[in-house]
Amino acid sequence: MTIENKQILINRTKSFLWRLGGFIAVGIVGFVAKNLDLFALSPQVTVVAGLLLGELTKFLNTQNTSLSD
Image (cartoon, rainbow, N blue to C red; front, side, top):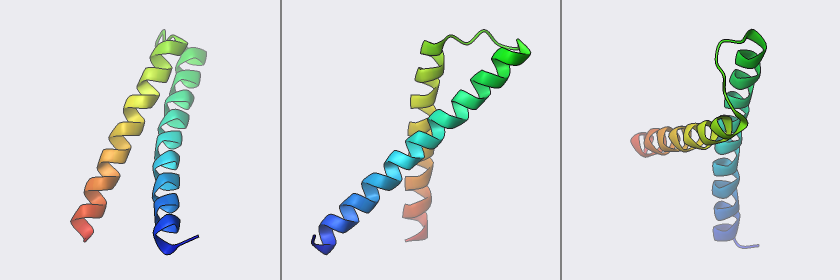
């Protein structure tokens, strides 16, 4: 595996982990909210919120990385 391929793999793994973190965060919030009956979040809303949060965290990570360069 070349150095370029390794860097691409690392970048894609980081992106995946950012999105996974967003899904986990929204899942936890949805679980807590359901158990506390604060919000009536359907599974579809939780998934969409996870996607949005994943994209937001990826954007923030990209901005943070570009600012440090």
